[in-house]
Length: 448
Image (cartoon, rainbow, N blue to C red; front, side):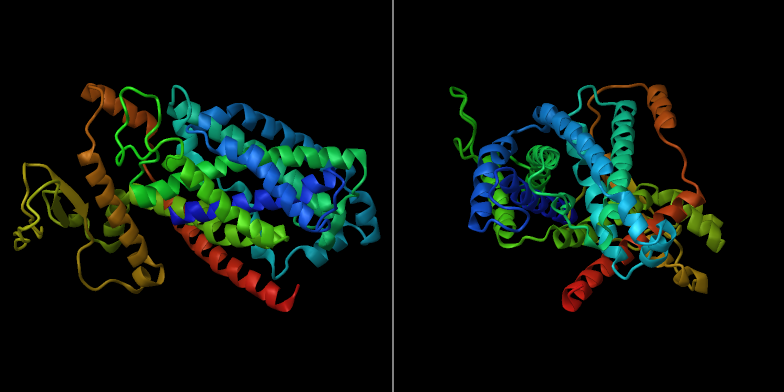
């Protein structure tokens, strides 16, 4: 949740900074960082009149029309950068594309760029909210949404990044439109499209930030219905007009507006946000979730690698801790039985099976490859998953054959390659987070 908030908060600040860069230029007040305090006044007025009202909505589905406008504006904007970026002139003056690749392919600030890309491409923090807004939500419909949207975003990001950088190289600014002229009609149309995108994208990140705050501090009660009963005779929401949802929205806006008024450079905001939140959301979290969901299978694989085949049995043959689904918290743990289980008192017959690797001396590769960490993630995930499944009551009655058919259709058994990819993603995310923050500190100290 904290990483989700970092991602959403950083994106919201960046959107406000872009509005401060583009709209004053459109109005003829100033270009880029010029314009003085008038830029800040314009930012406040435009954000209060457009962004905040859209962010007040209860359901993200109400933003479907504005989201379509935003995507359309993005596509046209990328086409503008491709058409008007001076790529050919820059390549010729730099000695050709081979010379550019030789000089600029790898730099110490590579992880800063990775942080910016992570900020742009990481959408896991809003995935559940978006999926919840879909009508007739199914796995196939959600797969179409994710595949099509990510494919389009990847193509647009690659085209924009390539043509934008090749047009201006080291002079490329965080807002690439600042590299273009300030008075051209086409350039100002592009700025207008960028402003439209920012106006309509900010509310989606505000939804995520608001959701995280309500989950952290109010147990997910967005409207405050747990604190104030809803009146049966009026349509007034709990807490009046300024209910919890609207207060959280305004509070988030103020938190983002203050740094947007103080700072002007968009690059560090995106890179630091991506290095911290984006790396965790885009790389660490998916790998950890995969290990956790498939924790029992991973621990069985670890037992096979260790030669503990007897540990692969569930519940009956030992090697697992059985935790109660419900019971008396005042009771104490009993001694382990003959099968090696640790018995806890249980109210009822349901037990949660937690796979274990037998204690004892492990080979060197176990520690060199970080298996204590992977085992800890898998064990915790397996226990949490089993507990959640045990506590969840089915909403509809289905036959056992139907449940098996659905499970076989939607679930593919994990392979060793899948586990390796998951572990590499976690490692890469940790490295990217540390290196990204360190690179930002290095750049600021050295003034690069």
